[in-house]
Length: 338
Image (cartoon, rainbow, N blue to C red; front, side, top):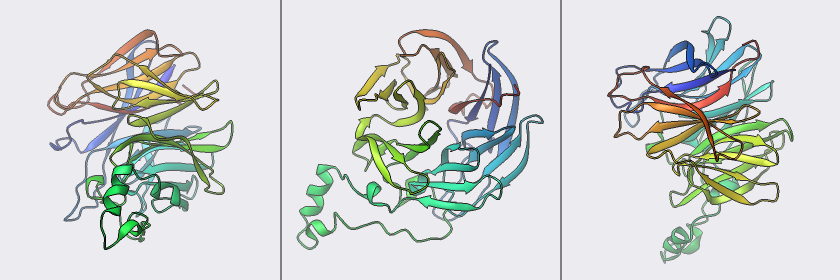
C-alpha cells in the first residue's frame, strides 16, 4: 500500500526552503519512494506574509491535486511532476481538500470559507462562508455578555452579520484576518451520502471545534457535532456508522456515532500535534508533529479500528533542516495504479 503525505517546515519563520513536499511512501516497507518539492506562490502585502505551506491532497485518477497557501497544483502521478496550477483571489491559507470526481472542494482557512472549483476548467462554482448564518451564530456566552454590556449597542452588536467584500485575499494571513473566527481545517466529500463534512479547529477562539455537514448542491448546512465537541477538529474519515476525526490539540481521535454520540479516544503520543488521518480499510494511519520547541522527527502511527492498539509506526524526518522541523499535514491514498 502506498500513501501520499504532505510535509512542510514546522518553523517557517526561517524560510530557508520556500516549498512544501509531497512524499509518496510505501507503508508496508516504511520507505519513501518519491518526493516532490513545490514552491509557494507569493502575493505579498504590508499586512501579511507568506509561508512555505503545503496542506490538503486529493486525486482524480492519476491527477493529484495539492493545496498550497494560495494556489492548487495539479501533479501527474506517473511522472510525479507538476503539470498545471491555478489560483483565485479567495484562496487564503488553503487547508484540507477533497473531490467528488468532477469538482474540487477546498477550505480557505483565512476566510473561513469552502471553495468549490470545476476540476476541468478550474473555474469557481461557489463559495460558502464566511458570511453564512451558521458561521455567524452560536456565540459563546462570555461574548454575548460582553456585547450586551455595551449600552450604546446592546445586543444589536452581538448579532451584527459579517459582511464579506470580494477582492484580493490571497496574501491574507489568518492572524490578520477579520473573517477567520473558527479556523476551517478540512472539507471532505462522503460518497455514501453525497455531502461535504467541514471541520473547525475552534469556535470564536473560546470554544472547541465542530463538524458541519454541507450540501454541495443547495449549500444548506447543519452541525453534525456542535461547537465545543472536539479539541482542534481536523481530519475526517467515514468508518462504519462513525464520522472519525483527529483532535489536533488534544492528543486524541474522536468520532460521532450514528446515534449522535461524541466519543474521545486518547492516543498517548504527547507532546505532539495530531494531523493527518487515513483509513486503510483495516486500520488508521495517523500523523503526529512535534511541537515547535522540539526538533524531534514527526511520525505516522498505524492504529486499530478503535485507536486502542498501535500496530506499527514510521518516523518522518530529513526533508527540512533540523532547526526548521518537519510537519505532517495530510495523509491520503495514492492512486490505484500504485
